Length: 287
Image (tube, rainbow, N blue to C red):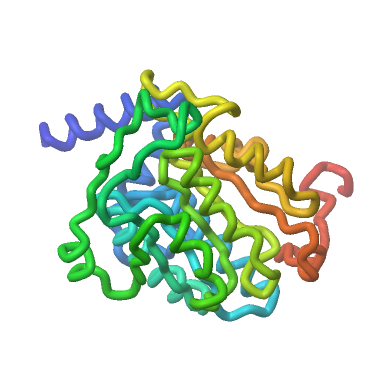
């Protein structure tokens, strides 16, 4: 009984810190342990180790299904120690079961830790070569679905689309820290529309960080995004506006979700909203 009270007090403190009512946090705790809950219900309350992976993959699959596509691909750029790729793999299986859309998983990494930095834009005051060294053999033994692409991303991304011919890209997690590496990986969005959803969900890991990571649009991932947008007239990467207000539980990842809009995609304007029409009475217009 005392342990239950201690846990309840801890949950209440978390809710107060997040400036939310305790109910969503209590629901999150319950759903984390509920194996029978639906994927959508779990996602509503962030009941995943990496809810940003779950959100991006799930809504990419729903978008594909609405467009009449039966397969997508999702990516972790920067595998680190491997925990993220294993979680993305687990989420992909769950999304397949929930939506009927097949999800291919790819992880890109040097396999040797971070490379040499280019210049100040890579924030060498924060990152150093060799950080996040991956035990490739150990990870590959644990993977059941994901495909690991090893090597310097400048080279591995160059011919990836042409050689692999992946299913349309639906979700990408950018976690390579450097501006220079992010620039190289953004080339995936130069692919022909057959290899892209009209809207690709993106998670940018390295735009918040701790107090030593002072991110801005002149360095790091944010600079890479800025330059991509300046160089592309019909494809833009933009933050999901007011995303935190769509979520039951406010969390830092809400500030890190972006979408690559391919305005030149032939399916961009196809209606995919599940509502057959707007129900005006919900807005107090019709009585």
